[in-house]
Length: 226
Image (cartoon, rainbow, N blue to C red; front, side, top):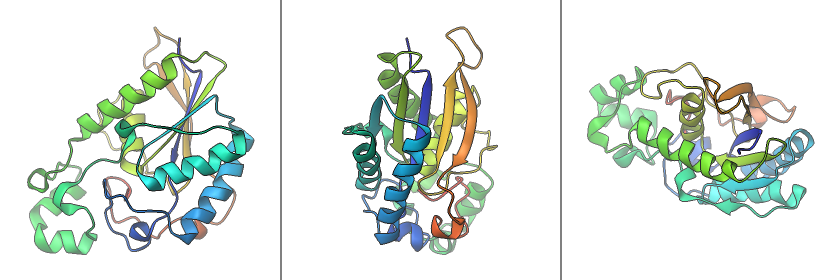
């Protein structure tokens, strides 16, 4: 068995998002805007999807976003380290300009979709594998009428959705990254279907102007700063 519906929600804004710094696995809390986003997004998500089970990355920006939604639907999030953002090694905490100045060739390659090898970044395929395994493990105990809500991070969610659709996370870059407190909605196709999940909606959120939700233009084509 598996959950019939999976919703993957990106966390609210942080100071690193606002200053366009690559977060990765740095444990940065929500800023004031992010707390507002989490509260508004919780109501919007609850109006569309009421989770049977709520799970979250243990990083505080995701966990606090999950708790805001959980308070609305009456659930406490289950924390899972496998749902953390992609690790970016030495690049974490830096802006795009700072990375480009110190690693110009690798930064240019990364913008083309290649791996930043010397930075010590986690491989895309590894992130996709741990994310999808975590989603599958939590969804397995649920039924077709149940909904699993997963609160995670921009790059990690994009890589997970790519893998869930049967695509190659190392090379396929057809999904735009989620805005803060926006979500992707997938529906189970069935155990023998290829792929086993269908993307119903992507980058859905509360009906507010995006300048209230986003830090600004995304410099990170990974595709979005974490």
